[in-house]
Length: 302
Image 1: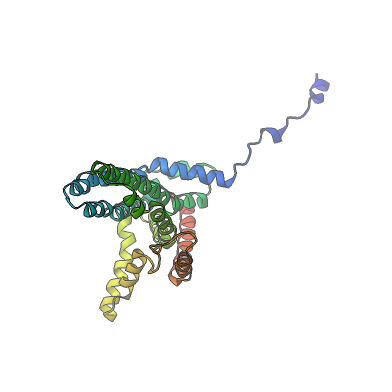
Image 2: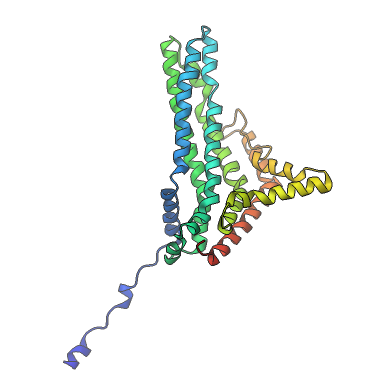
């Protein structure tokens, strides 16, 4: 019996070992998990878009139908597009800020950090997945919602013009939605992804450190620096810098005639990429993210 047992082949340990999961796939799953747990990131812009379309249907179209001048009626239908875009993008930006404030703090508060740390997912992957949400996912989702909203508004406007006996060609030519969407993509990448990166990274860092009231701890240093500067030197340079960071760089808008082959677009992009505030902000965001990764390694539940 021993000779028979010794003649059996040794078990293949290589075949039973679990295959290594690529880091990109782990990051993708982590981002999916963040979206699944924070559905307000896309429901908030969707609700704002629905309210905007409803308001456009009642107010703008009603005002257009009440306008006897046909040329003025066309102008009325063109007015609310930029306002609707700004409203949806602003709501998504605020939702992204609140997400960053709760991203690392929430898992410590509900003690789910113990479960997530038991999985073979590094702290770096976890923090990067949370940073990817406001930096990449939310702006792209919001842009898709804006495009769908403006398309619905254009169809409603066309129905009003057709009901008035007017041609929709003037409206479609004046709106030039592909050109507007190109400008929106440019704004999304330069401002909401690159320019706001240090803001998101700072909020993530505070979220992983604060035990409670993360929003107060995030705002308190800025308020303290502004007050000290005002009392000591009677200046407001720090407040002006904060306004500059939140309002965006001076040259981020796409020219009105901007197209992919327009040299003015490349001029504005080159001006944006040569802005010192952009690279200083990205450097600060890198430092904040590095501190957030190191902090999560040693932080436990609250």
